[in-house]
Length: 378
Ligand code: UFG
Image: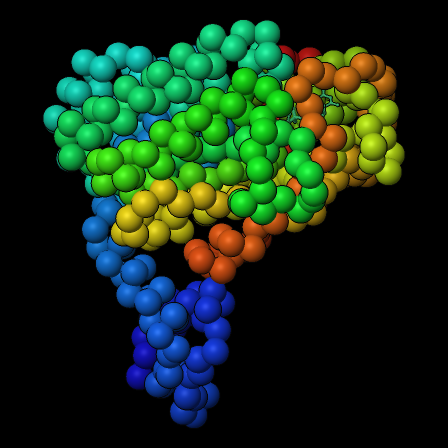
């Protein structure tokens, strides 16, 4: 008789690579016939699960990092967070060990790798504002490339060779067609995307030269929160992303939401993005750990495949909040592509990932999270 853990592993492997079957005896699965592809997926998963136990999470106090840390802890991984707290919240890591430091400090990193024996690193720490990167590219090359290299060098010196990287849909620039898959050409339209692409390439060569196994996850637009676990984006910081800004306007914290351009080649003239729940992104990281047993640098899009325009987001936010959201149309923002929608078939097929949440969940959970800080509080 198969136990429930085996059945759930099988179900996941069948979803990623079907064509096998289960023999059911008196309503209970008792015997599985697996195609070789499915068997390989299961076998890999098992090996990786045994191997990776202790993980260093850079930027683990930040928005996507903290949700991933929560899921890792729930799955009994041992986690240490490394964060400079420049844009993140100490409380977001809960009781998890936090080392406050900066990735530019090689001595601190070496000491940490010496003291703790990590099996893998998840690298979230980065500067992420598209507009700021256009105005100040030096900061982005320093923080996203030079500091990242410091981390890799320290890892190599201490024999840590498994790496999950927070990449971005910004690597594609203005794509020739949507939905975008991973083989589409990458021509970033801003330094932020350029630094993420540059780092993906570094990972490719570190794979060939030093045997680093890596997974780069190209996030589309992260949104949503986990209010029950007191997790969300930085409440006290000034928001730059669309959904929290729209909700700030709903709360009356700001007078209106500015719509950056309504003259794009899209049905309503405003930019289209693929919004993805932060917990679905976090889940992709957990699945990525299993793939780390395979050599080389692997790249996956993580999005829902559904695009929403700025005006559609505002509309749905009014419906969910039951409030009027004043808006003002202003000029385009530098570096914004018109449309970015993910083709995520690769991660679905190879890692068995599926988004579990939709746009309504993202706006509702963000609304719950932002309401917690009360009207008038910035
Ligand atoms: N927007 C507005 N008004 C605002 C804020 C945003 O109209 O006040 C518009 C933007 O112009 C854009 C869309 O809403 O068209 C989404 O903007 P966000 O700032 O929320 O997100 P971006 O698409 O610029 O970038 C985000 C992340 C990047 C990531 C990218 C991938 O910040 O890290 O998604 O799609 F690379």
